[in-house]
Image (cartoon, helix red, strand yellow):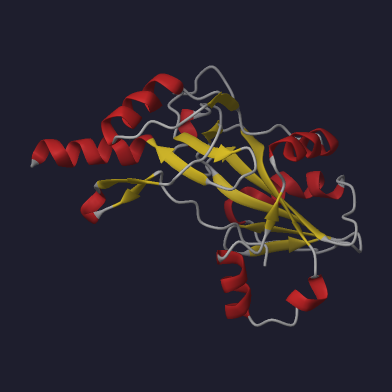
Length: 240
């Protein structure tokens, strides 16, 4: 019910790491935010005042547990944070955070040389009709989620919620009227728009950014653009 849905690449993936010229379609202004390379984390706020912590795939800790799953350092980093957040009202509210730095991922050295850890908020979902959803089996919930059943806050609502929770958002880079189209044009655009990360945690960080996430203000369209994908595509093209 609260697992974060997969985000498509802006240029769809083809065979053997290449990209297709076909893209996710955006209509209207597009907000570009930094895609931080860490681990997707969930703080699930329940209407009875309890909370649950999770990675993207697993639930790791519930309020009051004596022992939590230490995977990826999520519980250690976020348990105290979750305990201080306001109670959800008549819904399940899920804050999605990117936890990064430390030894969390192979890219951690891009953000820190001293194994510092931090997190950034990138989305919030508000789930109502809880009693109905809890009657569904896992396969039904997965279909509900994959077909847009979760309701996410729009950009302005997300900014206000971040203030209320005391969270920093993933960096807002800029807003553009339209996305670049071709693969080569998009790769050049990516290098220009985010030459280095905006969330380095200390001076020794290597500073390479993973890429960006593009979304409309209403969040009706969303896609990720990663340097890795465009670099791999270019390498494949050169070798052919």
